[in-house]
Image 1 (cartoon, rainbow, N blue to C red):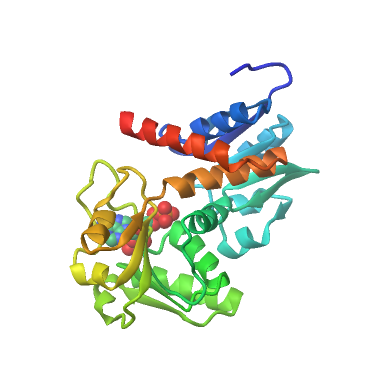
Image 2: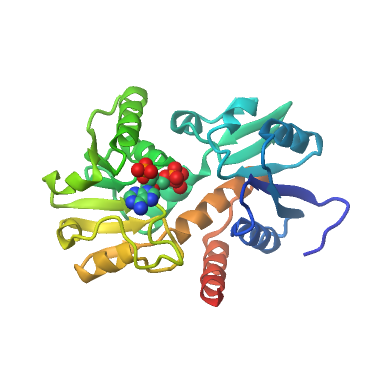
Amino acid sequence: MNIRATTRLCGLIGNPVEHSLSPFIQNELAEAMNIDMAYVTFKVENNLQMAIEGAYQLNILGMNITKPWKEDTKDYLVDIDKIAENVGAVNTLVRCENGFKGYNTDVFGFDRELLEEKIDIKGNNIVIIGAGGAARAIAFLLASKGAKKIYILNRTVEKAKIIANDVREKLDYTQIIPKHIDKYSEIEERDYIAIQTTNVGTYPHIDSVVLKNNNFYKNALCGIDIVYNPSTTKFMKLMNENGKKSYNGLKMLLYQGVAAFELWNKVKVPSEVINKIYDKLITLQKSK
Ligand code: ATR
């Protein structure tokens, strides 16, 4: 990478940031697309407002936002995209006049993964495991894409209820049902797309999974885990053992990065470039 006087800077605000794959993804994209941009991490411990305002004053082109700041960022923006506003979380800042506009490219990333894997949401039943930020973004996306029915299973059922109520209210979508995780067997449908949104099963806890009962997997159409390390999680193994296809979260991660890169640089990244970076990401994961 050649850093010059003209190089525009982008970065990731969060805490911790040291394990992020975003610098790899963004700098690979910049190089492949021949764009004079560099991407670094910024560990922000307590003053988010100062960090965002400072970034603007430093002429930074764009930012990604990760934990623990995705929900707080909306207070320091000049504008917010409708999807990010509904979801209540911002993970991308795009420079505009007088400040940054906030987007949620996690939603775009998941949507694109569904498209690339040819997973049809319209008219299908969905079971989401977990009720954190990722579950919330996915519930909003899938309700807006015409899912038939969406179940949200969580060990803290109140959190599932909050998401369900917000989706009902903001999208006028009624077919969303919160449940305690232990009551998963009450789900009558036998053809749902199961989406694992908790961090359970992430390296080094590779044998952990929220639901262990084979019946849950037998009744599914397929399974998507947002965890990508390891590349085949216990949740995915259980899906496969029950004859169902499963997908990890690496593509979603890559596509959310591509969406942010496209917003910052006003370009469209061709599929060949994305596929090459995806292969490099897999090699990188294997070498860890
Ligand atoms: P994110 O923003 O990445 O979705 P999060 O907001 O921390 O992360 O949410 C994590 C989700 O994983 C939550 O739904 C959490 O359940 P609780 O709401 O009950 O805390 C779920 N989770 C984490 N560890 C879990 C475990 N061991 N068993 C079941 N669910 C778990």
